[in-house]
Structures are given as structure tokens and as C-alpha cells.
Length: 163
Image (cartoon, rainbow, N blue to C red; front, side):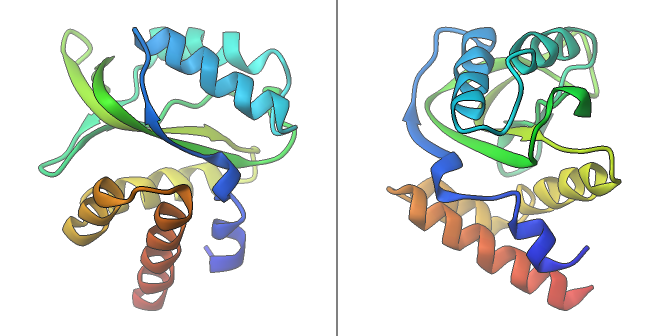
């Protein structure tokens, strides 16, 4: 996966910090609305991602940080992107690997992707980022969207240089 294609998923306009939501469904609705208003997804994206999350939860717990990677079918996507939501207070999300368990996610990566095979690579990249101590620490310390964007850019540059 080349850097240009990967970095195309990320944008400062798609990084929200200091976010608070009463529950995960309201977070997904709010994130989907941002995606829709910026022309990344169809209006149907919100319902589709909520329904998919009920059947196939996306919460992941790493040693460093609990996070979620909600996504849905490409039919609802206009152009690919990743909406990053850094939360003030963790939010309960059903765990991907144990459906009867929940995690308290601090970062949400809401993904809009096409069916071109890139979604699997993007998911793999996000999981790699969330298992990298320096990257996670820098994201958690970041105060502005631009700072998070630069952390991700640095990670991708270094990650791709290793491949």
C-alpha cells in the first residue's frame, strides 16, 4: 500500500478532538453526519454503520489503548476517508473478539472505504498505529487536529519505509 493512497484517507477536516457523546450510537450518528456534510458518504451511511456495528462490533483493546474501527459497505461511500474522533470521556463499545464484552474506547476511527481491497490495509494500518507506543502517546497528547494528522503522517511514512 503506497503512502499517497493511504494518506488520502486522512484529512485535518476529518479529525475531531474533545468529543463527548452519551453512547456509541449517538457518536456514530454524529460522525456519519460530519462525513455526509463533507461529501464523503451517502445519507444511508449512518443507518448502515449502526446496523453493521450491532451484528459485527468493532471495539478493540490493545495493551496501549481501547479503540473502535466502525465501518460499513462501500455502497454507502462516495469517497474514501477516515473520521478520527478523540474522546474526552471513553465510550462503551462492544468488543470485536468477545461479543458479550465491552471496552471503553478513547479513539474512534470511523471508516468510509471502497471495495478496492484498501479497506483491509487501512484496518491493518490503524491496528498497527494503536499498538505503537510513541504514536498512541502523541495522539493522546495532541491538542489540535493538525497535530494528530502529523503524527499519523509520520507513522505512515515510517511504517511504509519498513515494508
